[in-house]
Image (cartoon, rainbow, N blue to C red; front, side, top):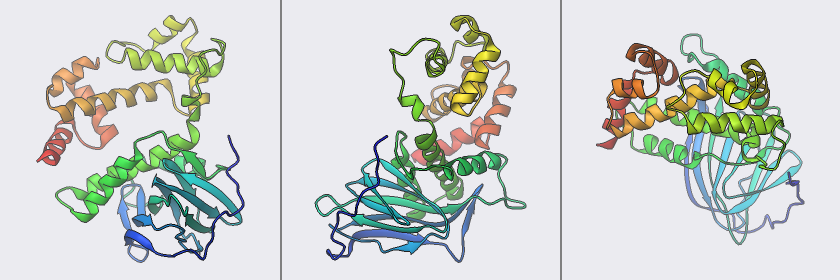
Length: 312
C-alpha cells in the first residue's frame, strides 16, 4: 500500500470558510441507536484551502470523502485523502483537515462510541465492539472505500432533516451500515486483491472459490458441505481457512448473503414470505422468519411493511 504520510502541501492562510455545513452536535445529549451512541454527524463542503482547525477527538469519528481531495492530520502525521476514502479518528488524537486549493473536498462524518448500555444494548452489540477493537488496531487510518457508504450517510441526513415514522429504526440501520462498511474497507481488502494467477491451493484463492460458489449458487445450496465436495477439501479445512482469512465462518457469510437477497425480494414485493423461504431453502417459513428476525431485528412482514411505507 502506498505511503499516505506527506509533508503538508497547503497554505493554511488560504480563505477559511465552508461552502456548506450541516452539523448536528449531541455531545451533551448523546443519542443512542442500538449499539451506537451518536455524538456528532454532519456534511461539510469546503471552500478551496479551508482548514477545519486542530482539535482533540473526544470520541471515535469516521469520515467519508464524498468529493474532492485534501489532507487530514492525526497527531503529527499527514494523510492525503481523495474521493471515496474512509478515514478513522480515535479519541485523544489531535485532528485537523485542510481542503485542496484546486479541488476542495466535501466530506460526511459521524462521531460516535460503542458503549454497553445496561438495558438498551442490541443483541449483536458484541459484534460491533469487536469491529471497533479491530479498527483501533489499524496502523493506517485511511482506507479506500469499496462499499456504498455514501448512500447510508445520505439516508442518515434525510432522516435527521425530515424525520418520519420509525426514524430511529432507520437511523440505527444506516449507522450500522457505515460501521460495517468501515470495517470491511480496512479489514477485507483481500476480497479485492484476488489474483487469478495464484496457485489454486493458496488460502486466498480457496476463499475466493468458496465465495464464488456461494454467490453463484445461493438459491441452489442445500448443505454447505457441498462446497467441500466441489473443491475437494474437507469441510473442516475449508472452515478453518475461511475463518482465518475473513474473520467470519462460512455459515455466517452464507447466511448474510441469503438475508441480503431476502431483503431485496421483500423490498421488491413480488414474492410472498413463503416463496422467499422456499427459494432460500429454509425447511419452513417459521425457521426463515426466526432467522430473519435474529438478523434484522424484525420479522419479514414487518420489514416489508417498513419498506412499503418508505416508498410512499
